[in-house]
Length: 146
Image (cartoon, rainbow, N blue to C red; front, side):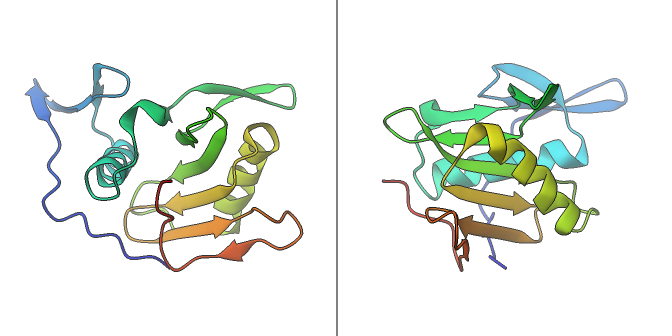
């Protein structure tokens, strides 16, 4: 499991009536701040601010065809050649990262075909290097963006 340091990361929030919203700089709009959205936004800011991933090469909540079903992935990080490099699945903090989470990520992977796989609920974060499809290696940290 990987420990991520979210210290110093603040999200742009606003309150409208009884709901809290977060500004999503990727989708360029205010989004209701659900527990899963909080995890996603904190991870996105971590990748940009602390790991120097280029914001222009991150894609958030886009539709993808998995078999005959349309789904939405959480985050895909693209390589500079615009091919998928990292696939990220986010869960709300109370949802444990389990084999079911892994299988959900693998469903998206069939279409996305990214080298790195990340699953997180904000407390538990796992990253795998799938460069060799016959031997996936679990990593002790997120990869540097190169």
